[in-house]
Image 1 (cartoon, rainbow, N blue to C red):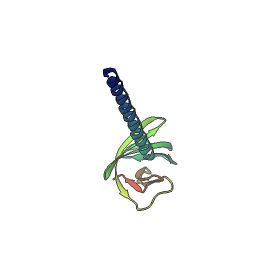
Image 2 (image 1 turned 180 degrees about the vertical axis):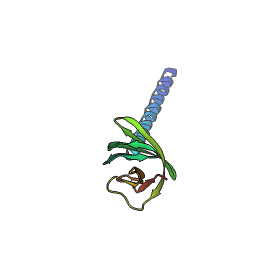
Image 3 (image 1 turned 90 degrees about the vertical axis):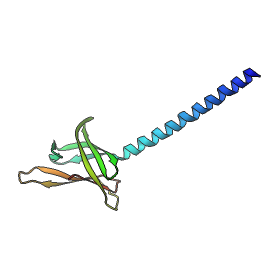
Amino acid sequence: MVDELRRRSVMSTKKYWGASILALALVMAGSASAFAKDTQTVKLISGMTLKGTPLAAGSYIISLVNHGPEATVTVAKNKSVVATAQGRLVDAGKRFTQNAVLYDESVDGTRIIREIRLAGSTQIIIFD
């Protein structure tokens, strides 16, 4: 009788851990896909600056971490982070179909990134 109770206890524990591991895997998979939505490739057709950091023309991976009305934007090239900046999120009310980088051009010709719009999102990242 004691051996039978131990066997049931071991089986119950295995079922519990199996269910826990499955639940954890599902949560992690959901988190990974949520993060993937906030990461996109953006191509700059000319050199620009983001919050004082120069970015040469080329393709960059833009990652966004949302902090409510604020966001941290990380810019990477060849798997190396080249810039990090704080931006403000504003809902455009419509979903963007393509990535866009809006900039101002200063008197000396420097292009300063003011907004980033990511395809599939309704959010505009504004850099003041």
